[in-house]
Length: 258
Ligand code: MF3
Ligand code: CO
Ligand code: CO
Image 1 (cartoon, rainbow, N blue to C red):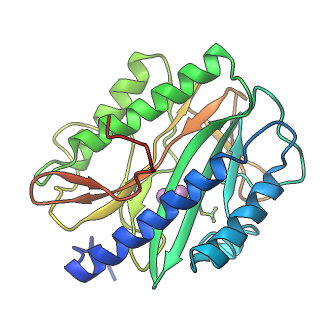
Image 2 (image 1 turned 30 degrees about the vertical axis):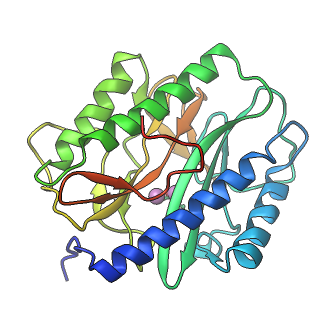
């Protein structure tokens, strides 16, 4: 059966709003715990506790295709899907924390970069440019726009600043399933690809590398790293295509559309 891109009903949209808001709340909460000496295992455990006890949700990553933890923590040259460990974070590290909660069968998926102490100028610039790239993509979302235009805009923003865009991983439709159609590539050709319609919901989640775009999967079957060991950064927001444009479902407290 060919997978099709679902248009969410008003009830589904409301469920995704709720799930998105809770995921954003979780991500905002865990940011305050990121500091030198804290392990990503500890961050994982705090998130799992908060997700189940405070949010009354379940952690989507836990057991997803065998993923062993509740969140993904991707440090420095790890691109995505890093598995929390007992190794303490150290001053100057950058870490992506990617959380996905399930509330009443619907998924909320969002991620952000966090600085462990003060980042280097290079690391800060990479993280800031990755954040800008995400918002360049978000700013293009409206009915009638094509996914190739969105990918092209993200890619252009990144490459103009001498960063590369990871090709092997992408955004995705979301709903009752963690990963649905369509694939939302962060590179592309203008005027091509799926035409967006009101009621589509998908995360945009560009991964930018300071060096070359190529990645390698580690033997644990999950951890994705840059082949050249350069730094990598990623931010993720879930968006809804509305009649007039876009609604970001995972805005954090104090975060303003930029
Ligand atoms: N949250 C990731 C995404 O944005 C997916 C993580 S899958 C996991 O799509 F199994 F590693 F958790
Ligand atoms: Co995610
Ligand atoms: Co995602």
